[in-house]
Length: 342
Image (cartoon, rainbow, N blue to C red; front, side):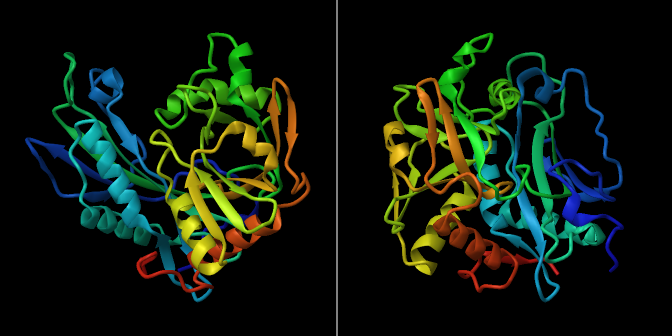
């Protein structure tokens, strides 16, 4: 199937409506039949649960064209499991892994000409979400829900691709109006928007959040997890905390580091005062893949990462090349990691 007439290598990380999206309604205690629709808009009650009590959850994953022309997704079963966990916490009906993968396959096959070509640097981003669409005025779960999944082609999440970026310590945003310094990203993305925009206005790409209880340990940024590389280049360290988003990319990178690159891996609490001792600092996630950090701004001065501001460090480069090689079908991945759609 021919591709859309798009300059794939020049697109950014933004929304571009495609031809079809998948929808399925839950009401009267059960899911109805799912179907594709060409309508990008939704119509809901002004009293819908999502509007009144923010009863909603979402996921994010990517679809790739491999070197041999296959269309694949990377570990989408884990996205299904994570969405199920969200649904349980918010008293929403769960979508089974089987139904999630079926919806993914149907959606992508209907939008094949929107899948960026191999080697373009772009991918097809998939956004599954579920929300309370039924009216509810008392504090209670919505009487009905819609599960929806759409796709959009995207380029790099951070401008400049894999060039090292600058971030700022979230403690510093106490200087912003309304006291944003105590907000943590992993609990609610909306709560990270204000400090995120504040950081952008000051010229930084992200905020580094510390633990809310002691403001001592590194947790995550508004849109990605951290990974660190020790100065000897032999160990990859990632923060451990119950409040960090359980990133599929981060978990996969730990396997890649150990089993493919022969590195030692540690998932443990990471004190902020350790950060300056690492040789490489990276942000990882579905959207970011791996993006290097070159500088961290704090009220007490800037921390310059030894790997520099001009390029990604050697260990992060190997990690990125290996995981993207698995995603693109150039390197054989562990069993079950690559889900072939067609």
